[in-house]
Image: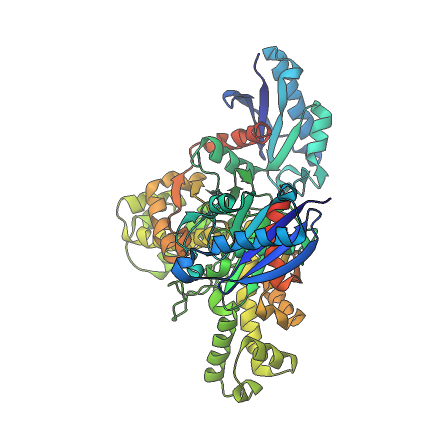
Length: 312
Length: 312
């Protein structure tokens, strides 16, 4: 009779749920909707009910459940206190304690990007590497840092929040965070679109990008087709992200960078632009860091959440 | 009938030795010279002999020794392998194993800046803070990062090697490491002198710095005396270091920055210049990080080395 645990990834529209064996196999995954009404007060109750239902459906005894891991979109400190998960409507409260009371199980919670990083380190692009930096390039830039196989949570749960490191003194547009020149302004999907639009205005070079909707995807598609202007945009993107990752490496000395998120679907060509500038800016001790693409996609979060329980 | 441990800080000219009680009190400290002849092959033997002698002098039984902690000037990985400690003449070897064989005691080794960081976190400027960044401003810029009370060693022992993070794209002089625009080029004693000399050439403003030897000390002395040009130099220094520490905070989310090294003797005025720019560039989640001055001075290394043993 094996043991089980749950890995839960709470998002703004759906909550991804995973049932895992104690040996780390994903046995089943499913989703429930995120009820954001009334400042998201039903979310924890809905998760607890979904777990209870699953145990009943499968005839799993409560005694065989090791615990429930949770990833949520906001800072979560070492004690499981969530600070302002605005996408869920949550203020500050101890999520770990609340879920523990609701379920009766051991609960561990973390920030969703940190938890996804743990998942990629355990079963994905960072497998076998105890020291890893995970970078997600989506609408924004997120990240998670794994040190010695554990999440870098930091003093207030903001560890690995690398999207807002300062990279450009001459930026005139403000980032969503209020600062100017954050990594996210150049390396996210919206950042790449911005770089491309700037380049299109400043240059009169022809480009396929002039004849279609500009997006991170269209930029990298054009790069693959040999479009010169798109390649200039990719160089700019690569220089910002490569420089940013070089600095992150000089702080944390990872074995591998794992790149995920929608933008990373561009594949190895994206890594080649980043790596070129990474090597230019990084301290020699970190020049050998590996780069790989994330592999777990949307399941990274449930894997990482399960690992929070299984790592003991 | 207490237990004891040794904390050893190996430098290029002297080896600092400390005998500690198991409750963490420094009972005695002394120094032995660093014998760098023959690629430093006698260093480990000399340390072992000094320990043996101290046990004999004090009549301490070998059974009462918990172990020997070591800090050395070079990268040391998680297994105690040193990589190219050039100041000692050392190549690559497992220092932990070698010292363990020589002494018969448990041995733990780390990079000297990381070990000093651990010392400051334990008994110095970072006391009570599990997440801390230690920065030493001396001839160069060194650092150590403490995450959850443990040293961030990294995949190859280069964790916290923050002196060479890239900060300035327009630098024309190379750093000692071969790159251009490293933090160390602006925030070390030599960096501050360089900034001051550049400013003196570029401006025709009068300044006390025109009438004496320019150094980090003379710059901050002049700042305290209200010298305008020196204050401009301090602003530049503060902007570089503040920006660098902001990025480091956005990666690691520390509770406190502890500033040590010769330059930090300038005191609180130095911190005020750094903090001004730190707050400008940092992500809001990290804006509340504390800043304090190191307090253990040259003893930080032996304290941290002892802590390596006492933390278990």
